[in-house]
Image (cartoon, rainbow, N blue to C red; front, side):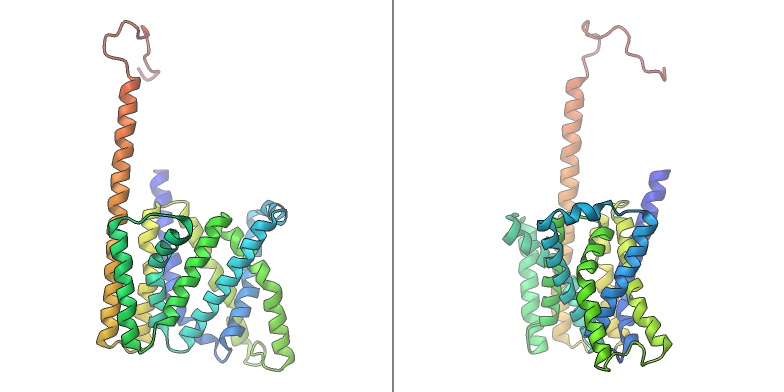
Length: 328
């Protein structure tokens, strides 16, 4: 019963995390007239405050001393912080400049870019269906480049930066809350310095646009931290295959926001490009489920074979005279 309750809570947490990431395009325009870099700096500064409070409540501080004594890990954290800065900043700029649909495409193709990076940097081997999915995504990018009249550089930059971030995080191997704290800790000083400089130049909107605007800029930290906390709760309670499916909720919601709320244009060639991306993702998901089912069946067969080898034949004189369980 407890396991079922945990799985249900994990599923709801996962839906909450990816759902919030999906509707976050509705939040960034509220922060105008602040520019993308100012919003990004506030996001970094206030995020550290939010995760700091969360760590204080959970009393999870011991990892900080261990991290400080590992310069290689600190270096990887700094790389992750730099890459996620590019990703966050470009995403905010895209939303506030009418490119929500193109930004959503970046997160649709991110799993495919992650697979390609696994081949290039980790020596992973692709199954035939994965090769077809990657090839289909390349065709999609070419179709979209024709549709946009240029390569979809926003989508590609978001996809490659987030895939690089995932690759570095895999090597760092830290919990979600801890790694976010470390990354925002690295970003805090330059972000705060930029905000102070902006204020000294008289270009800051933090106090010049009224208390509502000030509160919204501060809320950027909450908007960043809450989905990550929900994701952390989901990651330990639901299977990875379920999380893999839930991840598509975010770009789906972003895509819907771009078309229905922001009224961005979708000519036929863009629909064709997106259709190819979705086809690639369907192939990828089908292959993942098929492989998972096959692996599970093989594991069960091996377990049954081992159990059969351990069980002595009925009536074997070598067997102990009494092996009854307490339940009998």
